[in-house]
Image (cartoon, helix red, strand yellow):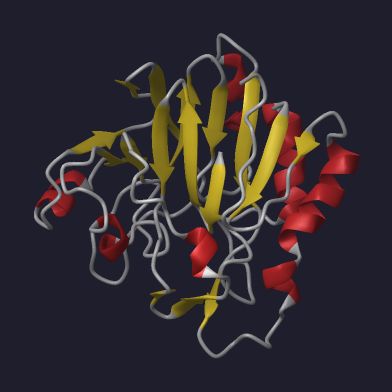
Length: 254
């Protein structure tokens, strides 16, 4: 698993490469990338078998970033976004609902619930937010953007193998963190429900509103390490890897 930044990751299981919520450019107005894009960019030689879009917010569904990929790349989106994407020139879009699965190569991708608003404001389509469960010889859970929810308990129960890795949002993109998000403490509490072997904090320390670099900087720099500290108390059996954008971690069991 490579963390590109924000909610953008590359998950490789059984030679299948999946790209989540790609935001690959220096800014997503009004947000600006505050890390080195040199380490955050994708290797153009790296094949991407499918893109997993969790919801339609601009910092998760970024059309200019998607246009950097081959136009016939398979893109999984929440139900309600398919036609909207097709009208924008994307040729291979598959709508997903909670519980629906799709086989991609040797892995199965299943859409999961996410407790987060999914509408594309101000005038875009409305669709529910999703997470995704990737199952092959190991299982990886990409939570997307979500608050903790009780039904997280059911995610590991649905697996044939233990959950190897959970990618959990622990922050935001500004000085406040509104409802529909987990902060580091709530994300650490989610580990008790998910029981993964390993967890990696995402959705922090990458983008920040332009001109607000000095306002609540701890909200930008500290969520990852705070998550590690909170997790050591809430779920000491879970291995926590705090990455910087561009860094990778080996999925347990591979």
